[in-house]
Image 1 (tube, rainbow, N blue to C red):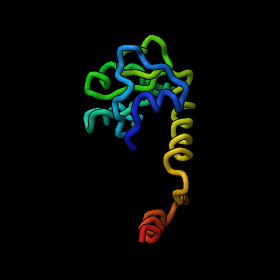
Image 2 (spheres, one colour; image 1 turned 180 degrees about the horizontal axis):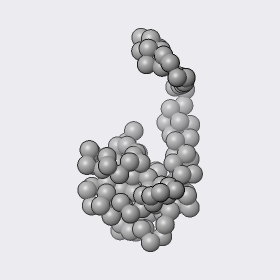
Image 3 (cartoon, rainbow, N blue to C red; image 1 turned 30 degrees about the vertical axis):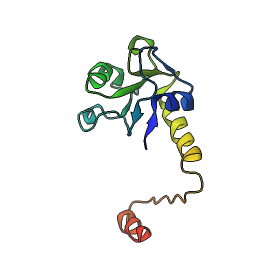
Length: 125
């Protein structure tokens, strides 16, 4: 993927803390806080769920070399991007990436309850 923090902030209309390097290259996006240790320089999207507000994991995740997309001003610190809604911003980022970076690329969606893996494998040939 490799987008910069600045590109991501621009794509979602977010604000980056002044002390954060906007040229840092982001290698991926994740929403499960348990994945923070897997790889550095990824963007964690802190989503408020009905049971858990993922913002509580932001400090730990950013201390492990990752960055975060937050919607709560209380968690807007270095290495974060502040947006109005993290859920909407994740959708906006995906749409922007598809439109800007994958323009002209064929996209195939496989859905259903049976045969997805087999179909995916055949399409990949």
